[in-house]
Every structure is written in structure tokens, then in C-alpha cells.
Image (cartoon, rainbow, N blue to C red):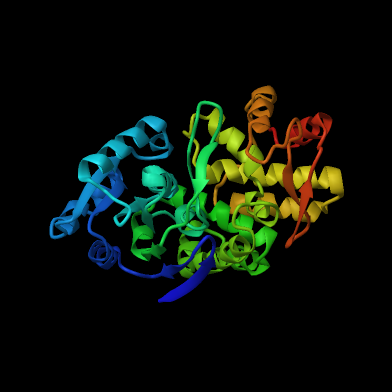
Length: 350
């Protein structure tokens, strides 16, 4: 078992290679009452109710699968359930699911009684390496992704690697997009590992190392800049364009699939604006394509432009991006012109 410390508004740890059943039991013993959020897929696949039955102080709230759970109507139902269960500030919430569930659960915990304790048990690769770590919580709006939220760190993150066994190849590959992002902005050894393990099946063999390296980078960055005043923005590499694609698809596209296209867009933009070398740009495409991730789009540019304008990183009329000077050296791209964006878009259409 490995542990990675995160320093935010409070310190907590990411615990790697635990068993979720024991965590549910331990957390329930630490609080008077516990509300557990989980999507239908997790509840049915892992027979979650049988583990909750002995926990007399725990109740279960089943949320929809996927990104559609991150809606204010679902939050209102969770608040209603919290009220009916009588959750107080000494009680807690456990979010067990993918990144959408940990985003949602953290936000519900942050807004109930102005903040109660919560715990994350991520069940997808993307959630393990990114969404559950860092204290960002949120839901979506009609305007864009994650525009309603707060910074509210969990008391702990518990990674049970057994969940990856039931994760589809498509979802595992989507998680790899976030891992590859970390390789390009900080830990270049990740890129070396994935070039040698160049299929989803082979990458699964090194899941634990990939998760550990990715979380270690995120923990270091978050500990230096919890509320994203500057440094933490590097973790959004590929996300400005990626979020626009994800929103346009009505979240039918996996987050990691949209980020994959966003990574290529950001690399191409850096090539145009600050001269990122073509071999680095080409590596983005080849590495992502190894895992059958998309690297181009046919979505019309004007609606994507409008969605990017609503991105959280925008300031006034300026759309801001994270680019690269070179592998491992992020660069803030500010005041990018519409001509640069359109020209970059043309390079990722096919």
C-alpha cells in the first residue's frame, strides 16, 4: 500500500491499493451518520447494498451513470436526502464512482451546512488519477462544464485497483488521456512507460505505477496552489478545447476522449504561437492513437469557440490556454487571437 500526502485547506492522503469494503466500514465508525453516493452501475456490479446492510448508520443514494448526474436537479435530491437522514456537521458523505460522482459528491458535501466531511472512492482510471484528487468539486450548467462548484477537499481518497478489472477498454483508454497529460506537463517517464506499453492491455499491467506517478504530480501542484491562482492551471493542459468538445457532444463523448483532442489542439496551438517543435506535436498524436483515442474532430468551429469563451480559465474576452515550450515545460498562452485558434482548428480536422 502506498500513500501520497496532499496539502490543501487541510492535509489528507491518497491511499493506493486498498479494499473499498474496509473503507466503508472504517468511515462509518468515524461518524454518527454517513450518506453514500454511487451510480447504478457500481451498485449493481459490486452488489454494494450487501456491504451497507451491516452499517446501521449508513444510507445509500443512487445517482445516474455518467456526466448527466452532475445536474442541479440531482443535487437538490441529494440535499433532500441529507435532510431526511438528519446529517449534521459531524456526519459525512462517501462518493464511490467515477469522476462525475466524486465531483458531485464533493459539491454536495461542500454545500450542505456550508461543508461537511466527505471521502472519495474512485472507480475509474480518470477519477483515480485526476477527478478525485485536488479538492475541486462541481456540477455542470447549460452554459458549460464544471462552472458551478467549490474547493472542498476530501478527508481521504481511497484507490481500490480491483475496480479497474471491470472497466472497459474504452474507459481505461479515456483515463490514459489524463495520465498522458501529466507526462507532457511534468513526469516524462510516464511517456516512456506508455511508449513501451503501447496497447490498453499492456498499459493495464502498469496501472499502479501510472496512478502513483500521476497522483504524485497532481498532489505536488495542488499543494503549492490549491485554489488555482496560477501554477495549478497546468493541470488543465488540453482541457479548454476538450471541455468545449465534451459539452458540444452533450457528454456522450468520454471526458478523456475530449481531452485527447484537446491535447493535440493545445500542442498545435503552442507550435503556432511559441514554436513547440513538430516532433513533440507528432508525439501527442502517436501516443494517444496507440490507445485508440481520438485526435481530430469534425465539430464546426463557431460553437466550439463560444463554448471556450465560457471556460473557467477565460478572463474577460481573453481565452487562455496552457501550452508547452517543450516536454515537461508548460507555458501559459494568453491573448491568443481568433486567427490563431481558427488556424489551429484547421490542423486538427480531417
